[in-house]
Amino acid sequence: MNQHCEEAASLLLVDDDITFCKVLKAALEKRGFCVSVAHSVEQAVPLAEANPPEFAVVDLKMAGATGLVLVKRLHELDQNTRIVVLTGYASITTAVEAIKLGATQYLAKPANADEIVAAFNHSPDGNTSLRVQPTQIGNLEWDHIQRVLHEHDGNISATARALNMHRRTLQRKLTKPPAGQKSG
Image (tube, rainbow, N blue to C red):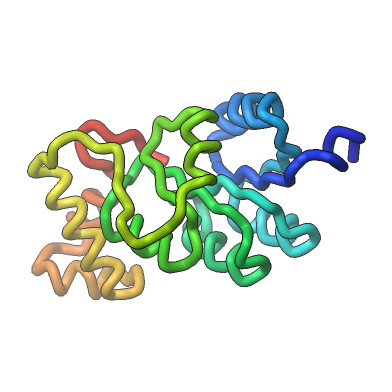
């Protein structure tokens, strides 16, 4: 660990987009953070357990476990950790769930380093707002699917039954974010 890291606030950056991580890591280091990077929840948990970070930036949708699993674990390790969840799949359901699990703020991608640093200072009060355009039909459907999926603990078969939808159709819809949102 270099001398800068001994003085700087620790930040754990978790996103499966390697290029995004490199760019954001450099930008956050310029703003005074000592940044550790992981590309999955499975990589991040041991880092967090060894040294719980003061700040964390967590992508919601990655291969393996969801970012919500990491938010919960980070909050269990240290309730004072300031956690910002980033996602290209912005939905009210996942935003509320992230805040309930301990996130400080929830931002829709793309978000820059200044927006993320500002989000660390947000006080979670249940009134989470997302930077989104006026609701489109596809977004309403996406939010409804996300809510029903959450109600069925992520079980796609049970969600498909509840939505009266073929399982493969639901899986196809889940792989495509609504118009105007990036994946991730």
